[in-house]
Length: 501
Image 1 (cartoon, rainbow, N blue to C red):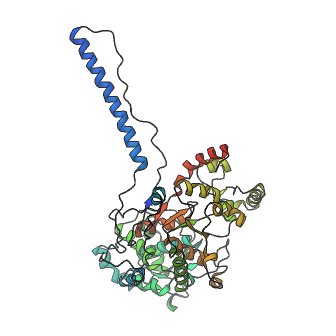
Image 2: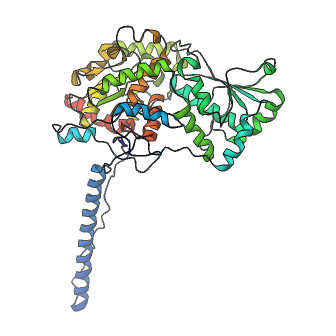
Image 3: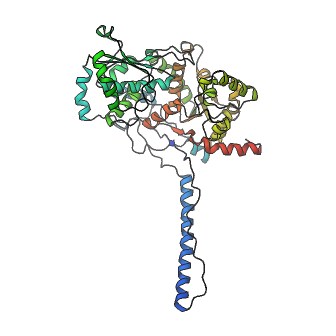
């Protein structure tokens, strides 16, 4: 589903055009006689003007390449349904229930006031949807085989998912697809206690279980627990599935044992299933991710309230800041606040070398130059200013408590005073039921970020990846990719040398 407004996606190329193609003119030779001299002069003239024309063409194309933006055009909020829908956002929320596949669309886009400068209008501008429609239509073969699959009672798949919210979502999506491949019933996934955030949330705490079952009832049979006939079964357990396995590999590896034992238990599904699947299985992935996995009602209600409070005041930027202590430890980078905090990270990394997930053979400066480090608050502020964000831009920042607390956020608050997060927007007691539940708080951040006009992650982690896909599917937001970190780092280094921000 897309917004009934204009939303934007931009990508910044990793490499720029280094040089233009110039064909050098031939050198003037010795003086020719009669017709031969005239012919040589004509060849030289043609070569010179041809080269000049090629140079001008290359320069013009380069300028167009650097300044091009897609033509802005209207987008319909529900492109697979009747496009003539009213714009008021009361109807906007109600209309989403009319679709069999429900995914709450974001709030409508804001109209920009005429008082904005050209640079500010350029920053908030939104492009069209390039003709894409988020429609999930399965083949006749898929639909024909579905009744027998959902009636099956012999095979059951159990999965244990780990990580943060977005890793959990990815693994749940793949679990449904694997259940379909094996023609097995899926037991509601078990969420492993998060060792970093000590979050013991269950599936039903985060997602709407009944909605999950209802949306997938024609694709995979979903059950809350194993039936009594299988409770005494010895499950086939797999802890280390290889990366990017195919449907054929899954069938050959598990199907015979699953038929014999009746229960298969899988752990650690992150990136285990191939990203290159047959069309129907890819569509099933989309159906699970954007229609079946709906947040539980308490989470959705709070997230909607906070999003409304931000939205009513005008357009806003959603920033996902990765400034937490564990992020700096895991990435092998340093926060750059002071020598005190840098030493804290070095010591923690020395005490817990298992936490370092980045390339261990690279130094901090090598990682920074390669664009592998999260942007700190100072660098994010520079990037927003360079992209034309006005000082009055309202910012919602998502993420956990940063290392250094408010000191870590000061550069952003200094240049963008209208700076909010879920704690500052919530009323007293509104977040009490979510305290010490990192996945639930991340879900609230996700909802508010999806309703923003601009989204930018400070690091290419799971939240950034999770937001990119619904942004493309819903076509609802202007995404500033952190792929430009490598290019911008060199600009930052020059600015630092000059002593200016």
